Length: 636
Image (cartoon, rainbow, N blue to C red):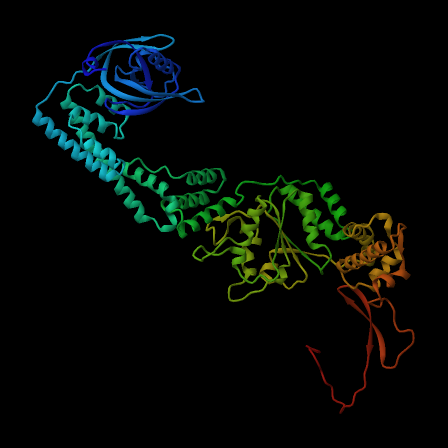
């Protein structure tokens, strides 16, 4: 089409609608077209005998997939379709060359395609000197923009420098700027060249200022960052942009998630205030700084503490008695005291009763009694071994000023078990020590005092936590417990098992357990009652049953080996006579005094932790001067 033809009105020109973009005259632009009407408009242009010409009109709303007449701007660009490629997804890629600006005089909206009648937009001429001066200013501003933004290639810049026509200069530069749809359309619709040049100069000035602000933001962010934080550059840049625009800081998603967790944790007012204060600190910190790691760790610990979650405690005394009898044989007095304790708890509906301390020799079932009480009351069970603990910080936590600090074991265990009312077993409380780091027994005073533990303060958390719903039970092998600590507990003594109790425990529990542990079937090993008694009398000497269990386990291993070697399928019965074959010679004497009187030797009786014992006391004659010599602590 000649230049004179482009200045003439045209009718029935097919319309291609554009989404969020404007094509200017004199530019070659690739476009992807997907709307059915626009594709049919291209087909209509392709079918024409003359030049393949379309009118490019922008939609007012880019998200409108099916625009009507009123949804399109009334000034567009006539363009020649240089190339058309159909893509597999049924869209079309075209290459168009903008011809001239055109104003729509009539727009026909049929179901198939938009067609329009247009007339060219005639630009009034302006003084040559003024146009040249403005063109020079615009070109200088654009060169400054290109140099600072680094968004314009050198080839494009060279091409623009060779343009002498002011209108074409504006159209070409407009296509290179990052403008909104409304600004691009305004540049297209403005008729006078003077107004278009003023608009372009103003926008270029604005773009240069934006580039300067962007550089300032980048510089500020880079100064705040270390090399290890470069991966967070974009997030920091967003923060700086928000600060520059004074729109406030929305914070990263991690902050929002932490705040939501704090809101949902059910913390006390003091704890929530402290957690929110730490979140505010974290929001202002560099994410990879050491201080941010410390703060994040503190918030995680605060969230791990069970502020509101509880187990549903059961107070069924009959059920509790059944569980205790199922798990333990004998210990009737101990069970009775425990059931009394649970019955009182059921009545008063609170846990400000005494803390129980189970005292007895090793192996009598103190720890397993705690587990049974937890099962009977439907509480979760958590155990803390105090043997060898010498540092008070193990109980009350380290202060946050120390590197690697964390809460004490009380808070850690509660966080792990996940409820605020478990049964907490403090095992081997008599085995605690003390040194220059403090006295852990003193740290337990607040924990075990029912009048104080509702405001237990861990050094790390620095806020109070209510321990009054926790059921504390302590175990000890002796009464060697600091007096202030002992004063806060009610002692229940667990005596050693009697011979009859050991026999029943072995027959009912231990033998079956070791059969299972060693892969023996019930019919592969039987142990006679006399053999069990001999095991107790001649191979163990203890108050509990751990040694007895080890001997039964040893016997089971011997039987398993014998069955494996002989491929025997018959039941192996072990009686008293065969014990020595499997377990070796007897280790202890039982209930026997010397059959004949011995010179210088008498028989005595003694009470020990494992029961009554016969003692042979012997007098020895040694040379001397007839003086009394005391050894050891005799007489003290």
